[in-house]
Length: 312
Image 1 (cartoon, rainbow, N blue to C red):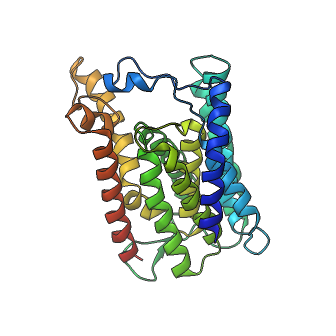
Image 2 (cartoon, rainbow, N blue to C red):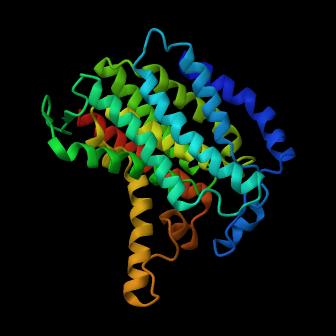
């Protein structure tokens, strides 16, 4: 039911929100140094993550009383979503191209993650005893390393999803696979976060009606940062952050491609490993269509999610 409710809300809100964003002239600005095929996307409404956040929030509210453990997941999702919304609003509505400054965005991310960390440490539920993949019934506690691991996992995942959001339908189609994985895992382990994982799955399916190629709306940082927060929160509420490199392999690959490209460019004096970073642009410039990149990345994620289920 949460999937159906959230999907219905997202599908119904799309035709309402898209014209509203057009009237606000909340159009996407396309990088001039990016693939030339993307120039035609300039002006397409962004901040579509509002659709996802509204659908997830309303649906989750219906189940919050009977499943209170969805609230930390919802907090991290909405917290990072609001950071993304501020960044998008400053860039596309107030017409300040920089949006939030890098230090402002990082500070806000640290604050939101810190509140979530305070919950985990104070919950008394041993949520920092982390399940080891492929070793049934075994958990590990990293002691004093838990806190830096938590901040690294949350902020890294959030920015990984953000880097993945660069092609029509890419971030949404990859993340709907991850959300489905967490739904199946939550049902199988009896974890009370099922309503919110279902809500995100349904919201993304509804959003994809408008976001698949050629997209009539982009999620913007409002959506991508929120989805990163959702993925990280689910992992910790289920004591499964060690599964993130498996189910979130695409996010990790996108981040690493940027880091490798920048470091190699500086070390080699201007040479590049990839034709362009993040990784999805490299495949584009190798001749892949947007639809092929989105499909292949989604298939890879689906297979890795199946592998992670075996790891349970």
